Image (tube, rainbow, N blue to C red; front, top):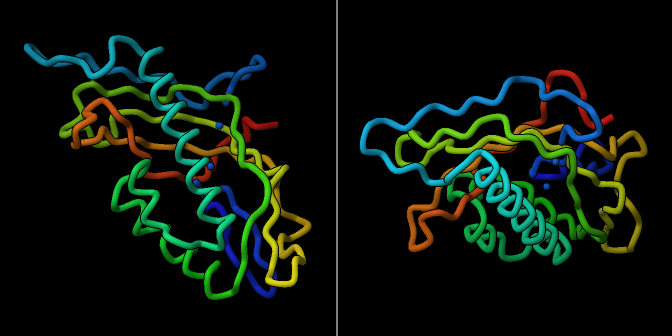
Length: 192
């Protein structure tokens, strides 16, 4: 979830959790691309294709998540089109909290500095097939209460480094990537 409510005020934490390493930065870890086994057909023809697909998937995830939060956390199952069921379930508490406290967001979450951390064409059942490092930018996002007052902490960082994991869809669009996990990067802040 991209926001967390803390002691009295809510704070937006880019737990989408809504991306990295252009501008001369070096990725925190090397890119890992295991070779497919004999007879295996890679999902993507190249690391560049995997990076492009994951970048598009994350943009769609942020778009849907922003829409849900703008509508006060209503109908969070819409995330199922862009995220795994497990990840949607993990995010449901935050959306429920937004509904209960009558909070909604305004603005658009963006991301930049996208870097491929890993593309594993051999991933069993497409689980964890792609990992990205990216910077989520919340500069244009605010969370408002029912009276229109901001509940975002003044100390909220606006740019947050994340590692995002994607699974391959098992549905009709087998090459579609779904957000499976989003964790704040605990290493060097590559968003600065």
